[in-house]
Image (cartoon, rainbow, N blue to C red; front, side, top):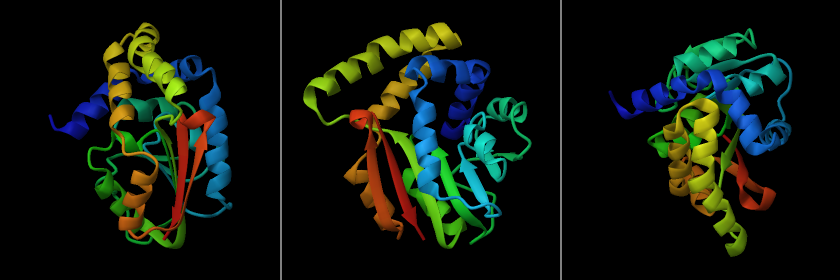
Length: 218
């Protein structure tokens, strides 16, 4: 089993309780972040939209259009219960889409789960139409020292226990803590976007830097 398959299998194990866990562990704040990301996306009706790492379909439920791609078949099965969009089981490093075929791309809390982030950014750039827009919502590391210590204590010690209790799979939440710590956030991620030739690049930190929204255009 390769790395992508392992990640897909892990998310499939927690798919049925994924939405409940997200709401409880974030106190519902993740929904406010997603609304903000959609606003920054500037989606217009009729545009071809891709929700990459779509999970259970939160973004597509709001937009009522577009295509969703995710590694986890069980996540897509949960999404099918909520939305009628076209859903494809696939990974962000090899998008099953033609060049210049998508006008808008959104990805929420998924980019850090892709083993080779530069490859995923390259693929997103490839499928975007000229002038197309990409928005990425992802966890990041708070910069204020005192708050950062509290945050990482919660992330590493408390979250896996709570997440494990809710989802019956603490391993997935240990994985979450590990990937948040390892993800190249902030200016480092903006530099990755620049290397893939995205322009009009911007970043907005949310809730003292717990999460960030990155945007760019082709």
